[in-house]
Image (cartoon, rainbow, N blue to C red; front, side, top):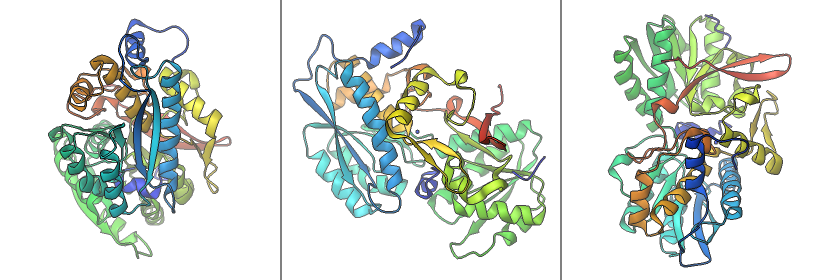
Amino acid sequence: MRRSTVKWTVAAAVSALVLSGCASKEERAGASAQAGGAGWSAGSDTIKIGLIAPMTGPYSVLGILQENSIRVEMDRINQAGGVGGAKLELVIRDSALDPGKAVQAANELVGDGQVRMVVGPSLSAFYNAAKAIYEQNRKINCQPGVGTGDFSVLKYGFRSQDPNDIGVKKMMHYLHGQGVKSIGLVYEADDTGKAIDGYITASAKEYGITYLGYQQTRPDDQSHRPYVDKLKDAGAILVSSNASGAKTMAAADEAGYKGVMAGTSGLQNVTFLDAAGDLAIGSVFSAGNVQFNIRDHSTWKPGYKAHVETIVSKYGVVEGPKSGAKMPKGTAIAADCVTAFAAAAENAKSIDPDKLAGAMTALDIPDSATPSGNAIKPADHEFYHVDDIHIYRWDKDAEGWFITDVTPKS
């Protein structure tokens, strides 16, 4: 195998975005579940949805991308009549990547009776500090930036991020099909790295892959060569999704490593490609539907295509200054939170939190009818499941970077 192979840096810690033409019966069912408000009343002219995200500082791109996608989906729903006749309105609180501010914002938004759902705060540690506030105050919340933790134990919390455990599981399935017999992990010594270590330990055995261990990196490492040398016989090395992972790839190239360089959903983002450069050619990553860098747009799922084209038209793209790689200036998994809220309210004909929570768990929106292109089936409070996860491979030619879907067929 050839070795020469936005995730926003913060997203690494997470882990890390108007149907047209003829629709099938399934698609029409999904679309009608999202349409607005006929036959019942929400009891007010406005329903507020809160967003807690870093809107300033070095990681403000995360909050901006979430805001853009949420606004695009809100506009679509409002143009269709709103929710129970009420228009959706976005209320934003800047967490500034400060856990204290995130908790303060959660307390503020749960105290606002017009706020019927809160999106965020992103990052597992921040959400862990806020989730009890939501539960105690019966506030529906949706999390597109939290990769770890058990949402099935919550009543009002739902996750629209692909959990890290299923991403690792899908990657093990792929590697097994490629004949890979062993894998190692090079990752930061943080909660995400430790969680991924546990996920590999559990799933590698299922696929007959030997786990050669977890090499914990340090922020002050000048080189990752010592870590790679300890894993030189591994058939695959799973790396971090930020500049640390790029450093691992550089060390593997220096060592002449010939195995597979792999990662989770953060490898989709242009900041990773800016850091890794051509070393990312041939690398593979697990993620939910991310078709933006698949050049054949006819393969894009209808809801995803409509959402992303609107994002690009309205807000543009993020382009890596070094790599030239592009991604839409929005994250559709945040928009899925709004899609699910509207569909649940329409089905329950209510915005009561208990009725909403019950209706959310009963949703079954097909992947053709969602902004992300992933099916929304949150019976266990998880929007997405292992069948929604793909394996993508990065490649580059004279026209620039592109991805190929190499997901195993079964």
